Length: 328
Image 1: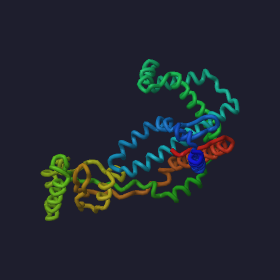
Image 2: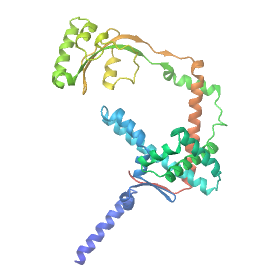
Image 3: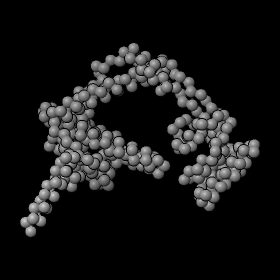
Image 4: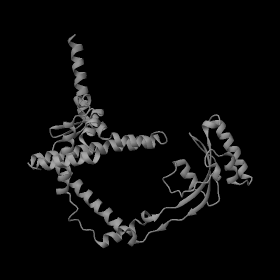
């Protein structure tokens, strides 16, 4: 019996040592703690709540069509949100440690302004909070912390003394000319066969292949589209708007921007159905002048310098604080 108990103790010790070796305390994992900042903790649920709106947007944009990209973006959002929460706690700790005093009357006035701007009145706010299981006191605390963060950042990371020289602007323009080209735009005719209307994916693809063979014999794309396409049939498949990169789904974009004017694509099969694309017109990229983009470049450089200063400030705050992160 003593031997069995001894083995159990050794096994438990090994587990504890393994957890410590990867920086993940068992209690942290059990309680969902993902970070400690001085005397405060950040939990997994706090991160999920803070990123809820952006996560919903990502899910709608990418989850169904690009699951791998969605996973990458979700992981990055998770990391960015955790970093933002850590920085919030560092700012609040600095505010308390330095004994800064922002008048409560100013904070209360700002909270009232935010309520009017976002909710209209207190009654609407209370109803909204009830739906999200949040009390007014919790809401007021979060708003107060946001105001403190804003004031502290304004004091320590101001743009006021940042100067961007004409030479910096010119050098950035020369090094990043591709950013200032108005992108290639195309106009398309599209034959779309909706998989829901043509049996199943296999039957839809067979019909699309037959249509493609008809087009190869020289039949008018517009004429064929006006008969077979499940979209824009009245215009012969023509989409009136000019299309830039980033608008179409990746598979369609790849096919569309590989076409020369007057050419049509192979069949592009998607979960929604099959597409055949024809390029009607191409508008080539044009480089904007330095004068046209000077203000844009100056703003970009200002924001980059401010971000660099912010990162340095937070690194200083971290060095004098206790910050420990655990695996999510």
